[in-house]
Length: 314
Image 1: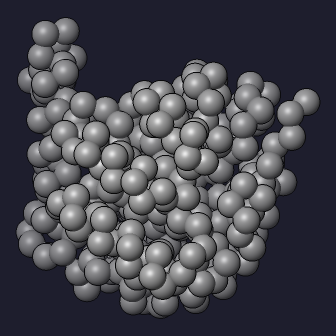
Image 2: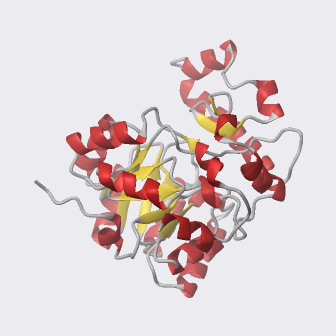
């Protein structure tokens, strides 16, 4: 049987912990802090408005430390910047790329000759097996406790399914906030963990004070799964605005999103509109607040440093 390497072995880091790439939230300061603590981290390429800004962020991190970090890339047609962003990541030789929401084939082919690792987000066995066939280096198992876009299965069920059906290293994503959670994932067979929500309310995060306070004040019972915003299941805090607009797509929205003719374009438009709502809420509070988070907000009691949060994980 092929050896299933740990995340620490794959990247040469001290702790098998990845500070997850969070849309709008992750930044260079957070990545540098995680790397200095012996972990790794990643940023969504879409957190940068221009390719120049993406390039500058990567160079800023490299200037601070040579430890390994990655960039998350949306690889489907909803991302018009995909090709340009990939070219930049290849030129700057980032340590790894995390692919989401699409076929990672072109990314894997381009990265192999350069030694750049490719980790693929998966929510089920079918996609995990495809990622392995294409030559991915690891899979990120996104479970039902993940913040933002989440999966359908519990961490234990998803890991056990993937253990039986693939030989790739498994990085468990969702519901992790302390060292006991990390230990449990490893015992179930994960090679590492990806942790996001508990890092939102940190000093290094640039989101609004209102967003950080919401992470502290709300509980896991306030987390709801919405298909209203982007067309895909998205976990958000159940604010009064979310309650008002509802979490289920109405009949017209469902019809457009599932029409064979309109589906491709409808999903593009719906995802773009939903992400714009999330973007507006992240940095400026309003009556239309849409704040992404996972159930692990229960562990957040105050605004702390990235280092302090990592100390709970190790």
